[in-house]
Image (tube, rainbow, N blue to C red; front, top):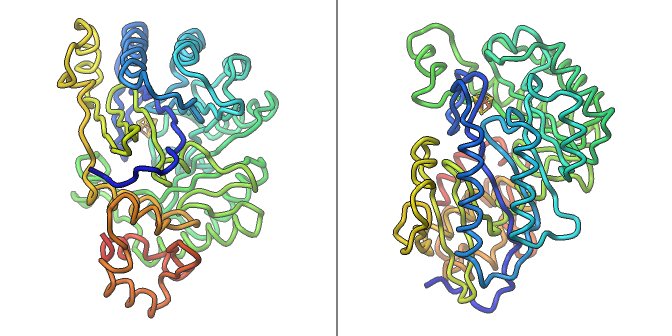
Amino acid sequence: MLTHMGLRPPPLTLYLHIPYCLHKCPYCDFASSAVTPIPEQRYLTALQRELQWRRQQLADDPRPLATIFLGGGTPSLFSSATIETTLATISRLWPLENDCEITLEANPESASPQKMREWQQMGINRLSLGIQALDAERLHFLERPHTLEQARQAIAHLKQTGFARFNLDLIYATPGQTAAAWEKELTEAMAWEPHHLSCYQLTLEPGTPFFQRQQGGAWQPMTEEDESRLFQQTRQQLTAGGWQPYETSNFAKPGHHCRHNCNYWSFGDYLGVGAAAHGKWTDDLGRIWRSENPASATHYMTLMEKEPPDDTQHPILHHRLITPTEAGRELLLMGLRQQAGVDLTLYQQITGESLEQCRAIPIAHLLEAGFIQRTEQRLTLTEQGIILTDAILSRLI
Ligand code: SF4
C-alpha cells in the first residue's frame, strides 16, 4: 500500500478522448484513426455510459472536477450537439469547481466560427488549436489537412469569438527547417497573442509512416545539435516575448498555464474516459489506482454496449494499484519536465523513501555538473539540464 495517508487528496480532473481524425498524420502515434463515417452517435452513447460507470466507481469521492479536457484525435470533428450532451452528462454526474477549466482541442479545418461560438456558449473556456506550422511548405510536409490560410482564419475567428484562454500547438525541428524560418513562424504565432503556446519537436515514433520513410532513406531527420539549437531558440524567443516556459514544451502568459496538464505533471488525480484513456486516482485510504481503457475505439464501444459489469474485472472498470516504484517513476518523469520540478516531500510520501537517498550517486553527479538544482523541497533542472532532460531522467529513474 502506498503511504500517502493523511495527505490532502490532489485535485480531480477528467480527460475525455475522442479518437477520430479527418486524416491520419504520418508522424502521429496517438490513439486516433480516420474513419468514414465517424460513428459519432455510437461513440457518444459509449462515453455517456462510461461516465456513469466511473461516477458509480467513485461514488464516495466528494471532489468536484477542477478541469475537463476533451482531447484526441480531433474533438472539433464532433457536432456541437454531441459535445454539449457530453458536457451536460458530466455536469449532471459531478460538481464542477466554480472556475473549472474546460478545454477543447480543435483543428483549423473543423473549427468554424459558428462552432466556436457554440463551444463558448456551452461553457468551454479554453481552446487548443492544432495549427502545427505557420508555413505552407511545412504544413504540406506534415500532411496536415488544413492550409496556412485556414490556420490563420481559425486563429482570427477564435480571437473574434473572445475565448478567455487559447493555445496554439506548433511542431518544429522538421527536416531542413532553418533557425530564421522558425523565428519567423514563432514571431507570427506570438503576434496572434495566444495565452499559451505548445511547441513540440517532431519525433519519429516507431511504426509511423514518417519513421518508415526515414528508415528507408526518404529524408534525413534534423541532427540532435540542430534540434537543441532550435529548442534553445524557442525558449529564448518566447521568454523574451513574455511566455513563461513552465514545462519543456509549454509556454504561458502569467496565470495562463494549462491547469489540466499541470495536474498531470504534479501527480494529481484524473479520470480517463473514452478509448485509450487512462485514469489515476487516490482513494480515501491513500491508495493510488490506475485504469487503462482499450486503445481500439471499436473494441471500446463494443465493451460499452454490454450489460453494466457486476465485477471490477470488466476491462473498463478494472483498476489496479500503482506500486510505489511506479508512482515514484511517474512523478519523476512528469515532474522534472516542469519548471517547478519534482516535489521531494511528495516523492517520499508516495514511495516511502527519499529520492536523495535512493539516488544519491546520480543526484550528486548531476548537481556537481550543474544539470539539476535543489530549491527548498524541490528538485529542478537548470537551464543547462533542460536540453538534456531525457538523458537526465534516464539516470534518475
Ligand atoms: S490530427 Fe492530431 S491526433 Fe489526428 S492524426 Fe493528426 S496529429 Fe494525430
